[in-house]
Amino acid sequence: EVQLVESGGGLVQPGGSLRLSCAASGFTFSGFEMNWVRQAPGKGLEWVSYISNMGSTIYYADSVKGRFTISRDNAKNSLYLQMNSLRADDTGVYHCARDFMGTGFDYWGQGILVTVSS
Amino acid sequence: QSALTQPASVSGSPGQSITISCTGTGSDVGGYNYVSWYQQHPGKAPKLMIYEVTTRPSGVSDRFSGSKSGNTASLTISGLQAEDEADYYCSSYTNSTTLYVVFGGGTKVTVL
Image (tube, each protein chain N blue to C red):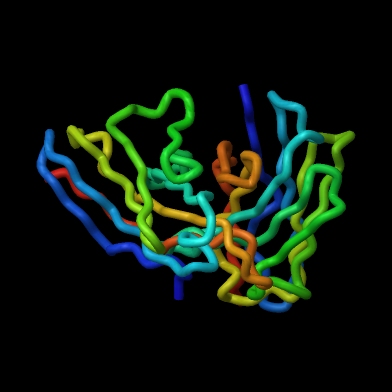
């Protein structure tokens, strides 16, 4: 069974940093591209970042470019999102999502809440 | 502001059919057959319902169908059931240099 489990969220002050992790199981992690998608409270889905299966290709949404860094460790079956210079509008639930051949996201984690507030 | 435009809400009675539209541009919906649809119940993770415009993943009811015409994609739910009440999001691959995937703003489906 495919499972994606996020961790590392919490309350952080504006300007602070957090590192999210996503532990993958039930599939060959190194064979799949991965993404982070977030959802502000009461709002819709927003794509945040993409990483190819070997980590050689990375994309970011403009809203996080220069502040967030996506990475992965295929030996540990883990995806990461380093978030720096956090702002109030970064508040939301962050999901990791498996990329289905570039056509959609077929498995999602339950998400982890990040709250940026003083 | 969301890149793809969806109606905020759609409602229907049990057994009826409803259609949710998703309007983009030639740089996303109109330019590629990589439109997908997601269902999200409150407090839950999104679930892939349709990919590549019309394809249902294994396990998704055939009451859900997708289509596309020009820059507008659509999701139709036939034989509406109470369990279909949820938020629905479309998404599309985009050739924008600043995005990889764009989502719609979401549509709340209410079963009357």
